[in-house]
Length: 254
Image (cartoon, rainbow, N blue to C red; front, side, top):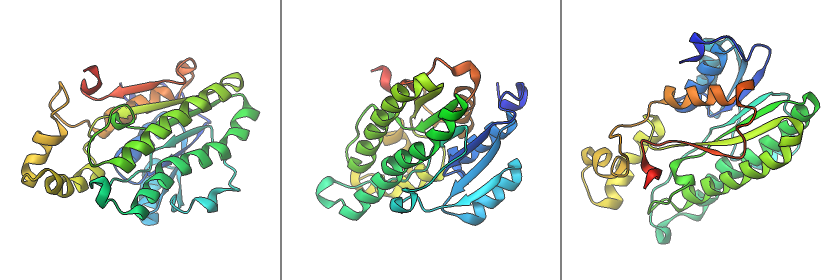
């Protein structure tokens, strides 16, 4: 059931979605707005963020989350924080560019820490908060050629659990969502790199790389992930904390 079919159970809440201008982030913005939240769409692409914010009746924040020191003194008055922004690099470790490794960690581990740090005082003061960290099946399993992504997502899992332990007494929950490959621009951009490192044609990547581990042989749709984010952001999910929610077509069932 989508947010549009449910009561507006986030009425009066303010949500921040990073990477909110496309893919999973855009779907989350639409879902949370349908549930009544005012959504701040954060993205490095200011024009795209403005467009999504206008669509959902929210506001936009153009931000480069790789510039983490600029977030050190940030304060956030949000009730729901969705740490979704991410990127991918596919390369053997010995060929992996050090600056690319650092950038992935900055965006997918350092910036979530800094945004959580900025949001918790407001959440603690209100006695309520929801933090949803967009991890991945690669936060629970590893794949070759993804050293930066896998290690960042594993770190995010740990950060989420610590946040859950500290936030629990204050009414704040923290969870991870772990999708397998989702039909997004991020996944589409991987295809050429995956073909190169695996030595296969690009048209074979989805079937021979992305879907080999799943029982359900298709990509996840962004709206499927967003529907879970929506529920985890409500009062009904008050006991859902410190945990990781797989939506991976059975990948981690093995």
